[in-house]
Length: 130
Image 1 (cartoon, helix red, strand yellow):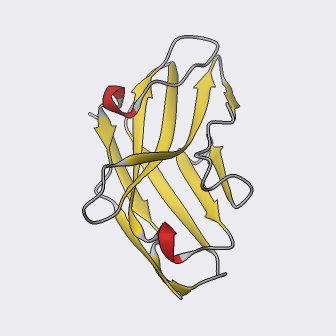
Image 2 (cartoon, rainbow, N blue to C red; image 1 turned 180 degrees about the horizontal axis):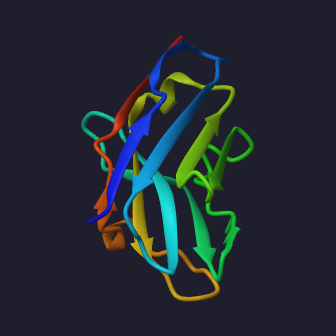
């Protein structure tokens, strides 16, 4: 059983920063992707950023949504089993519930679409005011 627990959300003004954390409990896979996704009211859940881990190493596969490139950074501390999302220059359009998720991935990377992620956290709310 895998449990993902997000934290770090909150309310900030436009231009501000937040860092989200996702603590993972339990064994995931030997080769897997973890990602951040978000869902705003009335909109579909969308991918924000993903990162791949396999063979004992973690690789940023540069899978950022165009809307967050240059502003958000995904990272992972394997020793702490924790995934992070550093969000800078936040905009009101970034307001959403943010989720972390995990999915099996083939060795070498290639993170799947959001439908293939089978472990999800409960979400943490990010609200950006103008």
